[in-house]
Image (cartoon, rainbow, N blue to C red; front, side):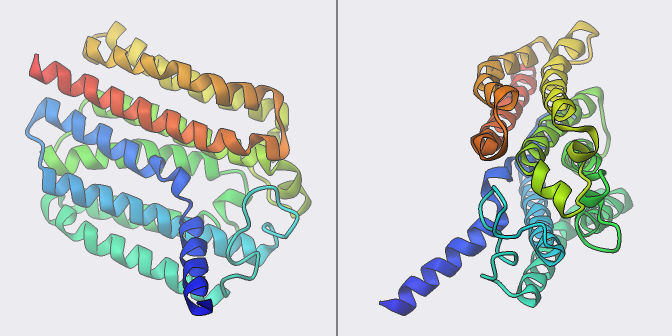
Length: 302
């Protein structure tokens, strides 16, 4: 019975290290990009599937590198407020986590080969840049997350790059729906990171991890979260108002009530009290993205 328990514990450790609650950041932009592609051409389900798989694997690889980098730098010590990290808690050796990250990025590369074949050199550049940025997020002498650039990385790569990459690989061109959808997806993906950094702001400051929230302060960090959520919901209003998006994308405003609970936590809470807001913000992003994509598809059916 003991070996079986050990296996279960190992599986649990690796599932937690992949941070499944945040994987909506990889799913949402690909869904929106695919829906945008349907508006200017024909959706290619096979390529959409490979794009989704590659995006998820890149995020998992990035999360593994984050676990490794923060663990080695002491950011994931026992006093941290979030769930225990694999390397920081000693559950996984650094070399093992490094190998897991290499495996995830290698699998993402294999999944991306059909995308490169279909989309050409622009997709190759996107793939290489995404993996390099994922590694640089918490690895190297000046990791992006440690110098306050993590938020920009998330907005660009889990917003515009992933959305427009999914659109380009399927139809070979871009449009305003893809750009605006990428902005909405990126804003909410960044909001997920902001909640995480608000929760860990004291611990990050102690170990010298200068996230944007550490640099700006908790008050500005809270305002940043609200600004990002408002930006996401302003996208369909702006797009429809200027004739850049079909009216059906206004359906994404139905996701506004899902922002209420995390908004209250961000406004009033701190430390461990913010932990539930992480999953709630991820859920908000996923539902927003699915409804936004549905609005683009409804326009075609009509």
